Length: 158
Image (cartoon, rainbow, N blue to C red; front, side):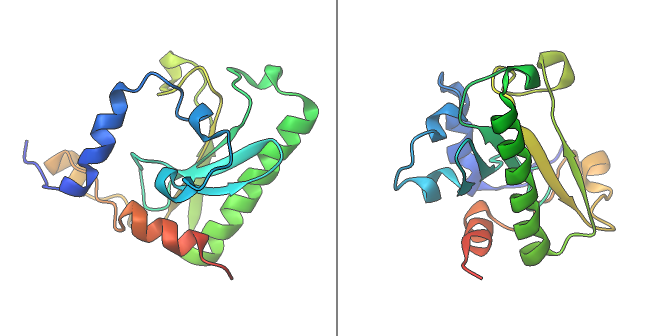
């Protein structure tokens, strides 16, 4: 297997050993939103860029409260979560103009959830032709923008 050199991603590798939930460390509104790639916040939820994106613009939306399953959310929290998905998608529509989306949740380890104890929604923008031979032939995925560049674009005021 060939490797593509991407030293800018090395800082994300070191985050893997952290014991705290990645969604819970984003609970308190701080000046570190840029450092944590927080895109937006509401009363009960927030959106952030995925540090290990499947595609350019891959974002996640999570409730502030640490819950494992949908049934644990109040109706108010659930509505707020879905509204945040809608708001985040609207920003991606405007700034990246994708041709489609994969939007969904993985609940439980066997479903593929990397953080199975805190429910979250993945929003993955898609474009015609964004699948190619690289994952199959080179076992590599190409993401066109750095997280910093993408964050600045998505956080830019209208």
